[in-house]
Length: 508
Image (cartoon, rainbow, N blue to C red):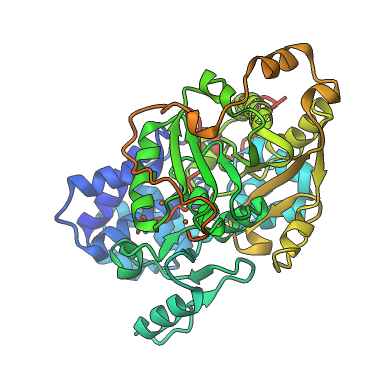
């Protein structure tokens, strides 16, 4: 650590505190513009910046002389080193200016007794109120504090190219630190957990396509889809395709898997991963929106439809701590409309007897149970299936009730929610509104192969051999398996994160 390194961390943090775009993107840009920084220097900058973002409300409190003081990035970095990392003033003094030494003594002496619970949890007042309403004060505080910790590095073994025992044995053999911290994930049968950060992107197992970076919760979602060989499956909001690849592997390279997304860039990234994976049953399609006319040809064709919906991403705060400062109640309200519309459109793709799976990486009922219940009320042709029973059929013992609900402090995964619906009858038999019936009748049944290409996406499409079984982020600093889809983040003032209560607009 040097005075210049502390200064650079403060420069990066100052840029991030505008919350105008994702923190990982800005940090990557900084490193691209400062290629002279070594591995350890980059690690210090990244860990310090993310450390401040995780504890921002607490650190804002201990650095403020008065309640409405604006945040100072230099003070926040200093406070992180002293109050979170536990460094002493004596250790830091050689690297501090006279002014910074004064700040250090003030920060060290600041009392933190009787802080408001929202400050202790390090979340905005509106989010704290929602967590308390759902979980009660005690568990809400536990959830908030669990997000102060860095997420583990979870890997998914690509069973098309390898198996977990072989991959695990290789990593353990390479582990020269003497620590026994490379383990199997407790729930996913294809996961490996590595608490320590490492540059997995250049590892031979990664370049050969034997592993992918993916949170265990995301891996479990693929098992909840429960695809079988030869099925027609759609990942309706595929993004960069982490779940698509996992589903394709479970299908053992048979059947047909469509990865839909509105972003050509994200699907291009999927193309790079697809080449490593060994999958040949996946077909990527760019769509303009969930109402893209070309989707009509696929109505009622799919055995499984996964809707990993755009959401607030508030279940991923261990990896993306900036989201708790970027997201506001009005953002969640906007997302609720999108989630409802996307789920309703995806339902039309599901065949009778098929399943529709709705998922988010959010902690909020507004984006989870409420959306699921509204969907069931509006679609009498669907029924809710028990998530725990579906997982148990695949020898995964994890019972969170009818819905899959994963929480960091209970399951050591990102926060995930999923609901599984089964289509019990044709839409027109269930009393669906007239417009839906007319749309359904207007779509002539066609073979799936007749689907027109949606856009120029650089993906190699190899048609799977009929009835012949075969088969289906990475980022070093802050691995983000299946990044949450955040819609148009808005700038947020740190000032609003002081203990002073702010009346949030309701998400309703």
